[in-house]
Image 1 (cartoon, rainbow, N blue to C red):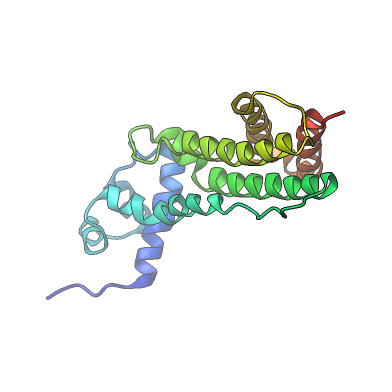
Image 2 (image 1 turned 180 degrees about the horizontal axis):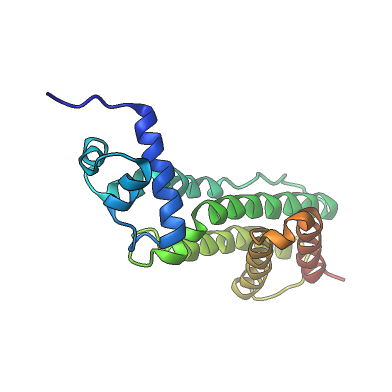
Length: 197
Protein backbone atom coordinates (compact mmCIF):
# COMPACT_ATOMS: atom_id res chain seq x y z
CA UNK A 1 0.00 0.00 0.00
CA UNK A 2 1.49 3.39 -1.02
CA UNK A 3 2.25 5.84 1.78
CA UNK A 4 0.20 9.02 2.07
CA UNK A 5 2.10 12.15 1.16
CA UNK A 6 1.56 14.91 3.74
CA UNK A 7 2.58 18.51 3.02
CA UNK A 8 3.43 19.08 6.70
CA UNK A 9 5.88 16.16 6.64
CA UNK A 10 7.62 17.57 3.57
CA UNK A 11 7.83 20.99 5.26
CA UNK A 12 9.32 19.33 8.35
CA UNK A 13 11.98 17.63 6.20
CA UNK A 14 12.74 20.95 4.42
CA UNK A 15 13.19 22.74 7.76
CA UNK A 16 15.45 20.02 9.16
CA UNK A 17 17.53 19.87 5.98
CA UNK A 18 18.07 23.65 5.84
CA UNK A 19 19.08 23.72 9.50
CA UNK A 20 21.49 20.80 9.17
CA UNK A 21 22.94 22.00 5.83
CA UNK A 22 23.70 25.33 7.50
CA UNK A 23 25.18 23.75 10.63
CA UNK A 24 27.09 20.77 9.21
CA UNK A 25 27.30 21.50 5.50
CA UNK A 26 25.53 19.76 2.66
CA UNK A 27 28.25 17.13 2.20
CA UNK A 28 28.40 16.11 5.86
CA UNK A 29 24.63 15.93 6.35
CA UNK A 30 23.27 12.42 5.82
CA UNK A 31 19.68 11.53 5.04
CA UNK A 32 19.58 9.66 8.36
CA UNK A 33 20.60 12.89 10.15
CA UNK A 34 17.70 14.76 8.57
CA UNK A 35 15.17 12.06 9.35
CA UNK A 36 16.46 11.61 12.93
CA UNK A 37 16.00 15.35 13.45
CA UNK A 38 12.40 14.98 12.23
CA UNK A 39 11.79 11.83 14.36
CA UNK A 40 10.80 9.99 11.20
CA UNK A 41 11.91 6.70 9.71
CA UNK A 42 14.63 6.99 7.09
CA UNK A 43 12.41 5.20 4.56
CA UNK A 44 9.90 8.06 4.78
CA UNK A 45 12.46 10.33 3.10
CA UNK A 46 12.13 8.35 -0.14
CA UNK A 47 8.37 8.88 -0.23
CA UNK A 48 9.11 12.58 -0.80
CA UNK A 49 12.52 12.69 -2.49
CA UNK A 50 14.58 10.47 -4.77
CA UNK A 51 17.84 11.50 -3.06
CA UNK A 52 19.52 14.29 -1.08
CA UNK A 53 20.31 16.30 -4.21
CA UNK A 54 16.64 16.34 -5.17
CA UNK A 55 15.84 17.71 -1.70
CA UNK A 56 18.50 20.42 -2.10
CA UNK A 57 17.12 21.34 -5.51
CA UNK A 58 13.53 21.62 -4.27
CA UNK A 59 14.56 23.83 -1.36
CA UNK A 60 16.85 26.19 -3.25
CA UNK A 61 15.90 26.04 -6.94
CA UNK A 62 13.19 28.73 -6.64
CA UNK A 63 15.80 31.13 -5.23
CA UNK A 64 18.33 30.19 -7.89
CA UNK A 65 15.71 30.59 -10.64
CA UNK A 66 14.81 34.04 -9.36
CA UNK A 67 18.32 35.24 -10.19
CA UNK A 68 17.12 35.78 -13.78
CA UNK A 69 14.72 38.47 -12.56
CA UNK A 70 17.71 40.72 -11.96
CA UNK A 71 17.98 41.22 -15.73
CA UNK A 72 14.83 43.36 -15.81
CA UNK A 73 16.46 46.70 -16.48
CA UNK A 74 14.60 49.84 -15.44
CA UNK A 75 13.69 51.76 -18.61
CA UNK A 76 15.50 55.05 -19.08
CA UNK A 77 13.76 58.03 -20.72
CA UNK A 78 15.10 58.99 -24.16
CA UNK A 79 15.88 62.56 -23.10
CA UNK A 80 17.13 61.95 -19.59
CA UNK A 81 18.54 64.71 -17.40
CA UNK A 82 21.55 64.27 -15.16
CA UNK A 83 19.44 64.40 -11.98
CA UNK A 84 16.97 61.82 -13.41
CA UNK A 85 19.88 59.57 -14.36
CA UNK A 86 21.29 59.57 -10.83
CA UNK A 87 17.87 58.98 -9.25
CA UNK A 88 17.32 55.94 -11.49
CA UNK A 89 20.89 54.73 -10.91
CA UNK A 90 20.41 54.92 -7.12
CA UNK A 91 17.14 52.94 -7.45
CA UNK A 92 18.89 50.34 -9.62
CA UNK A 93 21.80 49.94 -7.18
CA UNK A 94 19.27 49.53 -4.36
CA UNK A 95 17.35 46.89 -6.37
CA UNK A 96 20.55 44.98 -7.15
CA UNK A 97 21.62 45.21 -3.50
CA UNK A 98 18.27 43.97 -2.16
CA UNK A 99 18.33 41.05 -4.58
CA UNK A 100 21.92 40.17 -3.69
CA UNK A 101 21.14 40.39 0.04
CA UNK A 102 18.12 38.07 -0.30
CA UNK A 103 20.11 35.62 -2.40
CA UNK A 104 23.17 35.70 -0.15
CA UNK A 105 21.30 35.45 3.15
CA UNK A 106 19.09 32.57 1.98
CA UNK A 107 21.85 30.56 0.33
CA UNK A 108 25.00 31.89 1.93
CA UNK A 109 25.70 29.31 4.60
CA UNK A 110 24.87 26.43 2.33
CA UNK A 111 27.15 27.75 -0.40
CA UNK A 112 30.00 28.23 2.05
CA UNK A 113 29.86 24.56 3.04
CA UNK A 114 28.59 22.80 -0.07
CA UNK A 115 31.44 23.24 -2.51
CA UNK A 116 30.55 19.96 -4.14
CA UNK A 117 26.96 21.02 -4.76
CA UNK A 118 25.80 22.25 -8.13
CA UNK A 119 24.82 25.59 -6.57
CA UNK A 120 28.33 26.46 -5.38
CA UNK A 121 29.08 28.68 -8.39
CA UNK A 122 26.13 31.04 -7.86
CA UNK A 123 27.91 33.75 -5.81
CA UNK A 124 30.23 34.21 -8.78
CA UNK A 125 27.26 34.24 -11.17
CA UNK A 126 25.48 36.79 -8.98
CA UNK A 127 28.48 39.14 -9.05
CA UNK A 128 28.75 38.73 -12.82
CA UNK A 129 25.07 39.67 -13.25
CA UNK A 130 25.43 42.75 -11.02
CA UNK A 131 28.49 43.83 -13.04
CA UNK A 132 26.56 43.42 -16.32
CA UNK A 133 23.67 45.53 -15.01
CA UNK A 134 26.04 48.23 -13.77
CA UNK A 135 27.87 48.23 -17.12
CA UNK A 136 24.60 49.08 -18.90
CA UNK A 137 23.92 52.04 -16.63
CA UNK A 138 27.51 53.27 -16.60
CA UNK A 139 27.70 53.13 -20.41
CA UNK A 140 24.56 55.28 -20.65
CA UNK A 141 25.97 57.71 -18.07
CA UNK A 142 29.26 58.10 -19.94
CA UNK A 143 27.53 58.50 -23.33
CA UNK A 144 25.43 61.36 -21.90
CA UNK A 145 28.45 62.93 -20.20
CA UNK A 146 26.95 62.50 -16.71
CA UNK A 147 29.77 60.43 -15.24
CA UNK A 148 33.53 60.15 -15.58
CA UNK A 149 34.81 58.57 -18.76
CA UNK A 150 36.40 55.35 -17.53
CA UNK A 151 37.04 51.77 -18.53
CA UNK A 152 33.53 50.35 -18.04
CA UNK A 153 34.39 46.73 -17.04
CA UNK A 154 36.83 47.92 -14.36
CA UNK A 155 34.45 50.62 -13.13
CA UNK A 156 31.57 48.14 -12.90
CA UNK A 157 33.78 45.68 -10.97
CA UNK A 158 34.75 48.38 -8.47
CA UNK A 159 31.07 49.36 -8.01
CA UNK A 160 30.10 45.69 -7.68
CA UNK A 161 32.84 45.26 -5.06
CA UNK A 162 31.28 48.06 -2.99
CA UNK A 163 27.84 46.44 -3.29
CA UNK A 164 29.14 42.99 -2.28
CA UNK A 165 31.05 44.49 0.69
CA UNK A 166 27.82 46.16 1.78
CA UNK A 167 25.97 42.82 1.46
CA UNK A 168 28.61 41.07 3.58
CA UNK A 169 28.21 43.71 6.30
CA UNK A 170 24.42 43.39 6.24
CA UNK A 171 24.47 39.63 6.85
CA UNK A 172 26.67 40.02 9.95
CA UNK A 173 24.50 40.38 13.05
CA UNK A 174 26.62 43.10 14.63
CA UNK A 175 25.97 45.42 11.65
CA UNK A 176 22.25 44.73 11.09
CA UNK A 177 21.13 47.71 13.17
CA UNK A 178 23.14 49.95 10.81
CA UNK A 179 21.42 48.66 7.67
CA UNK A 180 19.98 52.01 6.53
CA UNK A 181 23.27 53.83 7.07
CA UNK A 182 25.34 51.12 5.36
CA UNK A 183 23.06 51.06 2.30
CA UNK A 184 22.87 54.87 2.00
CA UNK A 185 26.60 55.40 2.45
CA UNK A 186 27.53 52.59 0.04
CA UNK A 187 25.29 54.08 -2.67
CA UNK A 188 26.76 57.55 -2.01
CA UNK A 189 30.31 56.16 -2.34
CA UNK A 190 29.41 54.73 -5.76
CA UNK A 191 27.62 57.87 -6.96
CA UNK A 192 30.31 60.28 -5.73
CA UNK A 193 33.02 58.06 -7.19
CA UNK A 194 31.57 58.08 -10.71
CA UNK A 195 30.14 61.62 -10.91
CA UNK A 196 31.73 63.96 -13.42
CA UNK A 197 32.99 66.92 -11.43
